[in-house]
Amino acid sequence: MVGVRVRGDDHVQVLESAEVQTVPVSPKLGVNIPLGILLGLTLGVAAAMFVDFLERTTVSTPGDVTTQLGMNLVGFVPNADTDAMTPRDICLMTANHVESVAIESFRKMGVKLLTHHKGKETPVILITSSTPAEGKTTVSCNLASFLAQTGRRVILIDGDIRRPALSEVFETGSARGLYDVLVGQAKMADVVSETEIQDLRLVSAGSQPVTPMMLMDLKAMKDIMDEARSLGDVVIVDAAPILGVSEVSMMCAFCDEVLLVVEAGRHRRSIVARARDHILEVNANLTGVALNNVHYSRGDFYYYARYYRDYAY
Ligand SMILES: Nc1ncnc2c1ncn2[C@@H]1O[C@H](COP(=O)(O)OP(=O)(O)O)[C@@H](O)[C@H]1O
Ligand SMILES: [Mg+2]
Image (cartoon, rainbow, N blue to C red; front, side, top):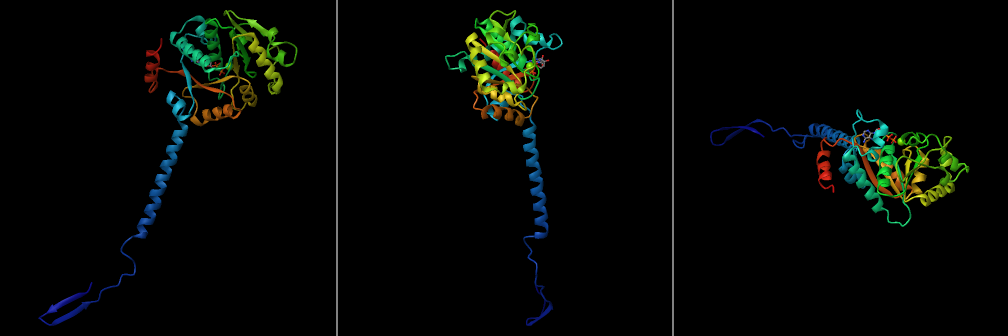
């Protein structure tokens, strides 16, 4: 811009020379660059927090199992009233016909597991979870009792060698069991004990603690599963949790179906995904998830539970 003053018709006087700008007026790099960095950082942190939030979200609903983890939902087990029932009572809900919703859940689960098994042989169903105390024993016992009530001869094996629980649930005492077969001192047929439930027979963990190394004996494990098959119509193995217990993956490989018990609301998706991958890595047949300890009245679950109940027959 040049400052000029007009004096009459022909006199034009320069009052001030225009300044030549050395810095471009636009873009304003001094402002834009820091602003861009700040905005980028904010968006980056927000995205990281969102991913972290998703990762931390616990596996709680059927959608978490099916959509997020890509697994089949075999069924849910409602939260039982622990004030009114002991852990043993909860294991024997289907045997004692105490909880209709739970019985219905196990009935559906049993039917799904049996129809999923296409083979002609007696199916061996292994029940595991990511970590301890998610409900493996509870699901194993109720499922076994339910299947026995349908007239099938059920063999239930206590395969959780670190925390065997079945001889206590069925009050069979510390009789001979898995240990005795593994050390070659008995055959499976010698160690099955009758229980109070008709058609349900038990193979306890045994007279001594089984060691993890014993379960790594592939030949012995295959023989045990084959012998168990010859003794009944369905074999259920109450196994140890799969994360951190290497022999469980190996056991999965010898079974026809693997059911992963997931306690609703307990673990982040990544933990359950790791358990799923351990099962799939050994080419085991992962039938799906039993979502345990579900509070039917809560959030998303209400709608699934209603659907589940409405379509019960
Ligand atoms: N659906 C349920 N409702 C209430 N309590 C449950 C349920 N499932 C399991 N529990 C309780 O949780 C605890 C652990 O269950 P358990 O079946 O022994 O787990 P795991 O065999 O996986 O270690 C037990 O005290 C059991 O009674
Ligand atoms: Mg257990």
